[in-house]
Length: 477
Image 1 (tube, rainbow, N blue to C red):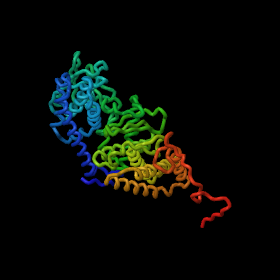
Image 2 (cartoon, rainbow, N blue to C red):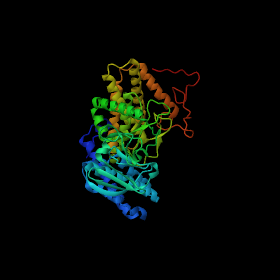
Image 3 (tube, rainbow, N blue to C red):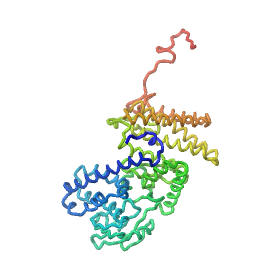
């Protein structure tokens, strides 16, 4: 399918184009999982190969269905495949093999349980002594001493049984898991876990191994129950606002984002957040009491996720440019072209949404209105600087050329849309960006200024190439 860049520059909604891209992700994930199955059969150490790990993987691959396909693009599967590609391309310990293959059994077991099928396979508890049914909100936690213990999973209809060494044993029905409380409901020697749901299919998660191990920016926040409730409540309010104000964005977010991970904010910034190309569908963000700030954060990080999904299938930059770094209007350090592109895309959409919100909100306090205006204006000047660098120095694909031109067009419309802002405010935003550029960019280039690469060029005096000679009169018509 030939993609229309306009559906990806802004919010297009869950269109046939969106569904086609998701379908390609499903196909890719299943092909990579087939590759894992073949590699396991030929490369797994003897102690690993004798365990029945392939039964869970083969169930997932062979049964098909829309629920399986949706699970194939779950961030847990995304990260599991990332670990396989990065880690198991090298010699690995037997312990690593058991953990990797054991983690996938939770994905399969959740699918079997939801379907009410029958299946049995071996698994291994994670480093916290837990089994998560990834793709669902549910899990089972044993004492920490059972970490990495081998277990046998048996699903009979809507009932899951887990049995391991040392009389480790528990069972739970799907109904019991649904009735579990977020902090755990006792069941024999285990706790039945249920993550807090913000809306169906979207959970708050701060413990599940495959969904938090790769979250490396800012640090995980271990929220107490009341804090977690408040975190989820503000996010829910932000999503409800998006449903009303930006339904196309809301539809895309609901279709893709499965997990929100609470992050620490030790410096007490307004908000910190992160997302990852190897966990598409996870957004990490800190708590904020302001729903509008959380809307802004969700749009920003989701745009990164959306681009990470798009760029696998339709690159914007031709290969071979990943090592080049340039001035970033958002940071003190240099950034790659890809980062500048993703930043420009995210902030362009944030600014567009905030401007739309500002026009529609009547009961806004004056200081809050000024703060939002300044936020919008600064984002526009920063996007302009980033797009300038991508346009000047990037080598673009055919789709990339259309995409970047489209971003310039949208930026121009937004600049047109802020002309009613106070002139002094626009000047403050422009001056702030110019000051940052003077500190960190190499003159008027897109290069980053460093200790080894400093703007020390001697320039000719103003008016004439050789300067104004003494006694010579000059005039300007």
